Length: 527
Image 1 (cartoon, rainbow, N blue to C red):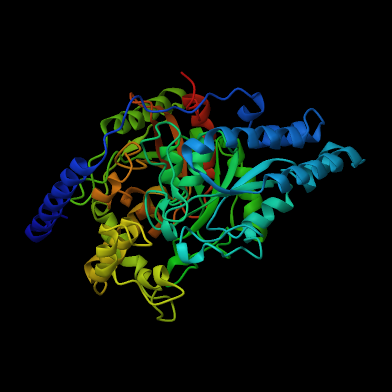
Image 2 (cartoon, rainbow, N blue to C red):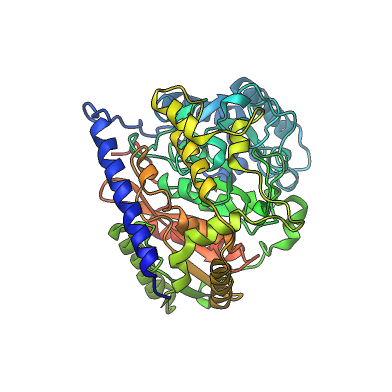
């Protein structure tokens, strides 16, 4: 389907406006002074083990949980002043819980297997996105008006992880109300990328991504309605999984879902090591574990593997960086050589309209006809809805309580019109094409983002680039984000691994395989 003349004119006008604003931004931005600071390298070997390895060593009494938790506390205290990822800690309580875990191990008479069955994460530290309820901890989602709100309960996935023996160390930063690509708000400030402090860690689960990438955590909890697990995992060189919707509970997150958002929102695991993804998901799914086939053995040689190198040329989205195209091509070549499979390269015309589809479906009413709660209302709570023009004027003189990104989202919301029948048809056609392409045994390789981790605030001028991740939320597909080494600039490369609905075990198995081939997470402090 070709673009119309009007679509091209609108895209050119938008590009011109963004170009002018970007030039002004560059002129007014302060110049960086001296060499950029770098994270110190990881020196404690406990920080280079997966959660599964740590849990095994704790059960076997080869290491104490207290030692592991203290190692992570030390690392957080070392790197958090540089990355600003953890916004509230509970170190004292965590050390007490670690001591209790060590006593449990000491007193257990049933053997290691009993502990593994009952408490598979016993004594392992955990970090949690601040948007999730973690009892006794802040739950503001970066909103100044919620700065005194403390969670009174645990969200279900957090509760399941704690019940499995995991020990929360604290909560991590996000974008304001979890709806932007950069983790920045006026309550906690801005979070930095551990590979380059002048770059973003992504959003909205950017605090999680940054802390994991900086080796301040081994496993974490994130949520994803437009790429909020996958973009941070990509930018910070770690693993993450957007689950099939309806498997992991989204309850007790802020903001709560409205409209059809629960159909697109997924809660899932984020971690440095691929082997932790599946056991974490098994725990976080709770009673819904039967909806997935996580115990099914996967023979990668029998999978149908498809690659799509870009969206086909959206007028709203940046072209994909050549280093990312090359990295994805290297994966294809490796799969064909090592597994002896033939990887099929395809083009899907509907992907060019990914943003239009995402934006339309995010604004549809629920099954009872109730529309989603306006973003302006959420920003203004507990008072009146935010008035974007007035808020923009306040922002220019430094008096706004909100970030420019949040105010901009309200302005975009005001321009939304009734759902276009053409966009609804495009989505249905794309859904059918993708489901037929993947079937029961397909895995799709698709770029995570057009750019490597951008510099701070630069996403304001490319606001639709999240479409590479957002479209997969609307299609309701499980996706695993997989790191693929580092770029020439030392920034993480990566790819999305996509499968059919409820086939989460397929991309999880592929991620484990690619970690061995491409090295997985890299220490950002290493020379």
